[in-house]
Image 1 (tube, helix red, strand yellow):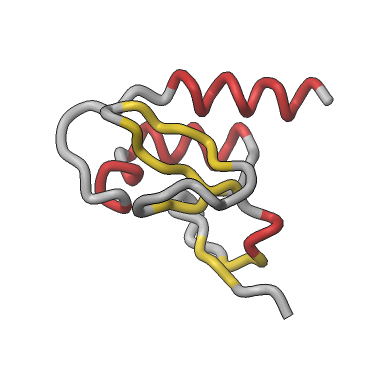
Image 2 (cartoon, one colour; image 1 turned 135 degrees about the horizontal axis):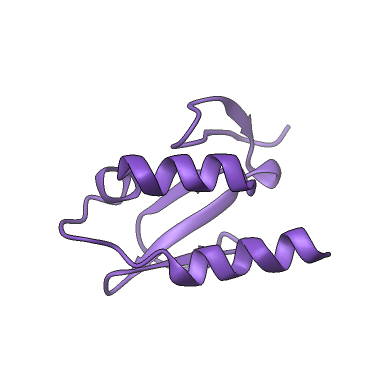
Length: 85
């Protein structure tokens, strides 16, 4: 059975293959599609609603133990790519 993770936005639990892992590179939020990048990760549903909620509430900074404003541009670009396919 696949491990369960909690979406940082909606707080619902889901299998890790249903969520997108996000890591921090500098102050940029980077999608980790294969869940293999090093470092602390945060999990979010790959949907516009959960992504927008997580960014607007600043939950990535808390989950990733980061300070300051984080750049969600790479993450938003990845979500647009997912939505187009």
